[in-house]
Length: 82
Image (cartoon, rainbow, N blue to C red; front, side, top):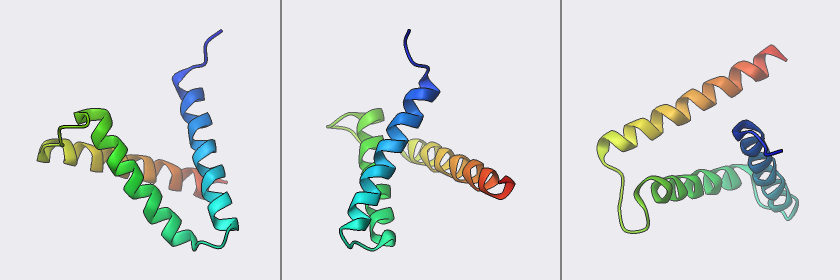
């Protein structure tokens, strides 16, 4: 039985957090790790939608920003409800 997209996203997210925590445990400040994760996500998002040779248009950038904002709002709402 194949995993749902949500299950795959959760597993990937857990792996990124595990890696971030191992970097933190090696003495790197969490804000630097967060910045690096955001930068890596930006690079990978550009690759995922535009490939190695392309870049996002202004419209594409706005769509990515909206997606990040929506996800951040969703996570904060979950944190407040716990």
